[in-house]
Length: 554
Image (cartoon, rainbow, N blue to C red; front, side, top):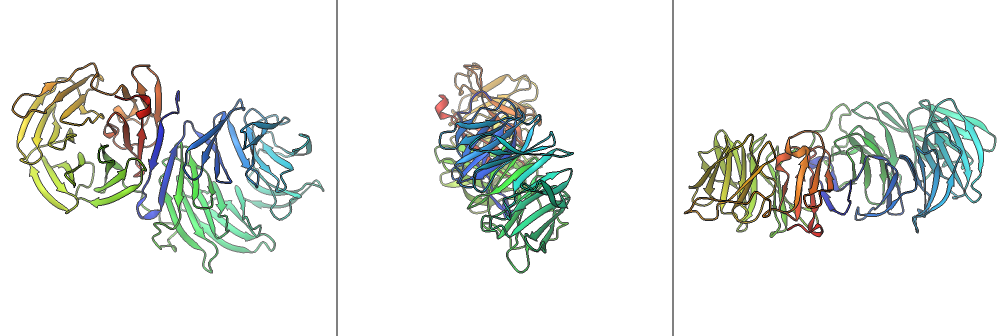
């Protein structure tokens, strides 16, 4: 990414299976995530992005490593951060200044895991070279070395006895007596997490998560995940909840009740979750889909705690259309289930939902006109006009919008594209007021939606044609082909051709890419923008709103 200036507001709604209050898009693929003192650290290639947990905004970028940052851990008080990298070093950062306090050298391969002791005097690091190092923070010396047979994927100090390390190597969870230099108990498992109260630990092994008492080792609870493999888990700060990631899905269980049970299923990531952590107010996850998501617990719980572990909850319906009304301060989305939602542009918060009959993959559009939210869709060679507030069908046109539908920016006209022909209908008399025969291959309605009665069409060869249908008693006026009437920002890449590749927002004046749209989009040609704001939809049912005003859009 050549510029990270674009202000990002990303909102999610995941129906009855849990609520994603905020999503932050990342500039690169994340490798690790850590939380401390209302701050999030994310390893992104050679950099560490620091995010504010309240706003989700990026507050700093730490850049001293020369290879991938693959492990992070905050000190208990949140004032320090330790990182491990593919450059074979361990670095200690001062979170007040953002500077490196010390760099620790000694590993001969990637540092896969790091941890700071409870008294903030030691750092434990594990590497793919099969070595654990215990570093003295004040002196920078390596005080102990543990040589193992396999890579060390996870390491921490025992919450019961700080004189013991707990690490994962060769699918074994092993304890190590630091002072005695000898191994302790071992368990079969791929991940372990300790409660903040030091009384319990959770062990992940395949599709099973076992919560045990740290002293007696008695099993407190046992859970199974539908996907068959749990890659990470964590306790809430009050030790009442346990969260685990299984592929693209996160689960939360109540482990404090007499009958431990599942209370939340969070669906929204489009690729595997890498790491999850609890803050004081929510669950935070990051994924290979290049996002960090903030999940609100309990806000939309179904109460179906005793859900069958073999049953996989349905995903939210994919976004199928979007529109922008900057003057009204809203964006409007419609999904495969026919649910129309309005979103506040400035805050990104979900405002209202309306059910319509427009289910399935049909062309559609919506706009707030004179206080009425009007929704249109095309099906069976007819165009249906629907009043969402009254849940009432207003009119049906004997016309096909099989190539696309768009309500004009002034709310007076309906554009229909079918078989290379644009037809324009008056929104209130339902009369045909204009037609244009297109010359070009595979036309589609452009993602730029200006105010008034203008429409732009793009073709397979990326050429563009535009018309103004503002005067009903005269032919449409052709618009300039030099883009002078369009913003100088343009969409390039994946969304134009419905591929899985990412798309970029490009400045046509400088030729630079200014922002990358990544993730699982549904209908790439339905990405909408008006020159200042861009809105796009995801397969997860989420909506992203971007503000490009400061870049000088016309």
